[in-house]
Amino acid sequence: MRKYHRILLKLSGEALASENNSIEPKTLDKVAEIVKSVLDLDIEIAIVIGGGNIFRGKALVQKGINRVTGDHMGMLATVINALALADNFSKHQIKNVVMSGFAIGGGVCEEFNHTRAKHLLSQKTVTIFSAGTGSPCFTTDTGATLRAIEIGADAVFKATKVDGVYSSDPLKNPQASRYKSLSFDEAISKNLQIMDTAAFAMCRENGVEICVFSMLDDNNTLLEILNGKPLGTIIS
Ligand code: UDP
Image 1 (cartoon, helix red, strand yellow):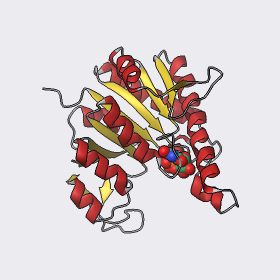
Image 2 (cartoon, protein in one colour):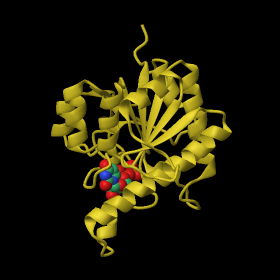
Image 3 (cartoon, rainbow, N blue to C red):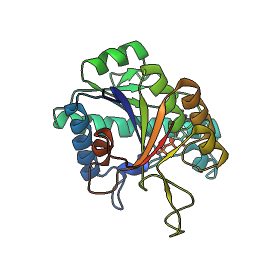
Image 4 (spheres, protein in one colour):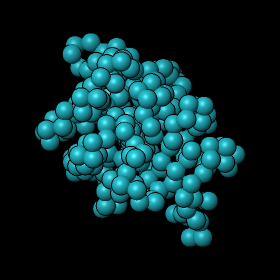
């Protein structure tokens, strides 16, 4: 029996950026290729996109901007990224709809609606959720777990720079080892800094699994995991 029917992919804004571009066209193509391969497996896929490549509320505070305003700017940054993803999906003939956590007029995108999102997903349309939870003082990781619960996703796949969760930072400590799996309680108590505690707690309460994997390598790791390869770290 297949383990996953509907998944939510969490991409950070930084995952889209390169040295030269805040939104790198080659990365957009890579995401489109990965998403197509998931749809070809007959698995429904929704995306939550971050905005850290453009603005983060916390960082804006250091520049003298009010936190709530900064968070609004951060959420709008996620909408910009979502529109870039969507435009490129359309070029690759991937059906998609962008939704935002708050209302944006002018035909820019739809406001999030869980019933409509589920309907679209069942029609093999990729839903791209932007503006996180729609409220300041949260992160898009919390937005991702919230949306995953609302659309009834089986798991949140969080793309990171490393290929899973390590006992310590593998970029600094060569002895660090990768966890193949963790419980939510272990992830919270070890304070592993993969996601905020609120996101873990929501997943734990609602039985949504988290898989941390790398999108930076040349392989399609997400596809390999969906095909049963024991890569990344599963938190359940
Ligand atoms: N943000 C927010 N509420 C949310 C999600 C995000 O206010 O529910 C703001 C916050 O300022 C955050 C920014 O949007 O710093 C971009 O999101 P995040 O930092 O999670 O992006 P990522 O690190 O995934 O690129």
